[in-house]
Image 1 (tube, helix red, strand yellow):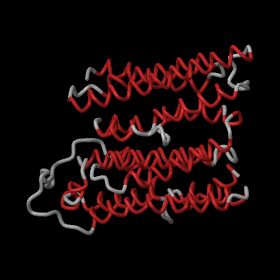
Image 2 (cartoon, helix red, strand yellow; image 1 turned 90 degrees about the vertical axis):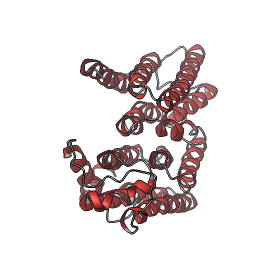
Image 3 (tube, helix red, strand yellow; image 1 turned 30 degrees about the horizontal axis):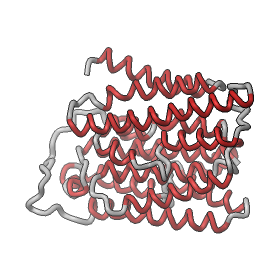
Length: 348
């Protein structure tokens, strides 16, 4: 892609998200979301592959539907209250519609069906943008308007997402689909705690972005998109194999890695709020997710690739891409648990 076009698209992505962050008016927020969607569409379709075009079309249709629902619901709310401000959401129908539309935008279950299919059709770097940056603006809107939403609805969305994210990833052989279901499960953790401690939602989001970036960059560095390719990585880069396995365990929330911290805080807060049953279900759902991360780790570190594989074996090829972003994100995805007390002082 032409570097000037790429620079324009990436700056538009930044502009759209910043516009949504800064707005307290529904029309401005909607405009930011639309700029965001339109900026990523050319990035998704840049390879002109049928899979990429299909994924782009699916993504555009779901995002356009969600944006139309947001516009309709905010207009309905303005019609009944006389205000476009996000803080004055007094119409229950409009509020429920906006929550459903924003859930569709970030891929919360049961509005998650587009997410694995779209991510599967993209290259790993565009998939990284879709899994991290594209979640920020809708989540910012959900956090800003959280007090207007029905607490039961938020809890139901959170629980459903963590369970679906765990169950859906169990039988996947494609790594991008595994990461898509991982994303759905992490979104559930963020939504479940939103009504009790919004600062924990932000902490979980930050950790999710770090760990997902490390996972995607590792796969990009090793050119792996399927599980059977993982079994051949050890021959090319044993150190990368070790850190990749640890990053996956961190995504699963295993101590003493970074991913344990937000789950620990969230379960603690749910128990404080007198919701032991919810906390138990969330912890069990995290175990389901951990199973498929362990499966990937087993394939990567404890199996030798069969002699006849359908994938080409990357045998000690020379890496041409920069490894600095991968190194930084991996270090943060693995080693931030010791600073938990400092973070506790900030968020609790």
